[in-house]
Image (cartoon, rainbow over all chains, first blue to last red; front, side, top):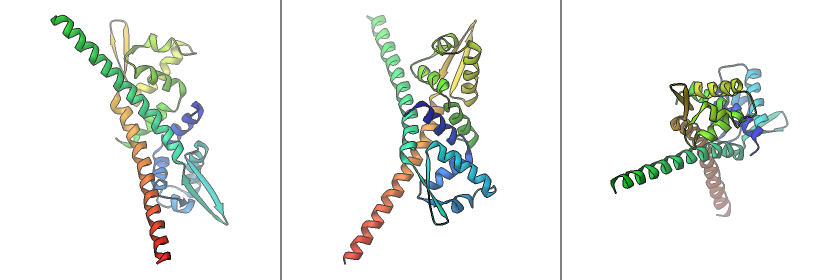
Length: 111
Length: 111
């Protein structure tokens, strides 16, 4: 995934309201009204957060008649997960290598 | 992990320079000078990014003599990974449930 897309994805996730919207949408599609209802803010304020989520690609929406339905894009969610998971794995590997090096040094000291 | 901590972690990751610093630190500890050297910016600019990473908890640092050494905090990295992974899993479960429901409807239609 391109760098600027990851910028937008992580920035979109850096807000509790937007994470709450993501939490709702991973359970299935929802209309804008359904998404805004449980949020402690006005509809226009909720829609601004939805716009950030749509700009990031995490959320897509489709209007049928007067109803706009939102969905999560699992690929964008997965790409953010993958970036973090790979870095965590790199950290674990570097720790393993350090461990192996220390074990070897110890064996050499005892020899 | 508390909401405001996740805010800070995702906000810290929403920048290519800060992700480059994380990429370097998952390979092992590094001094501020070592971290700043490959970055296309001044040392003070690099240090501002490091400050954001330290404020988020993703990076810790320790000064010995005149040298400040930075390390990744794997727990903070893991908590961000966990948040995204759990939401991706919730999305997969909701898709499985929809699939099961559609299969059942099909069987009922054919009965």
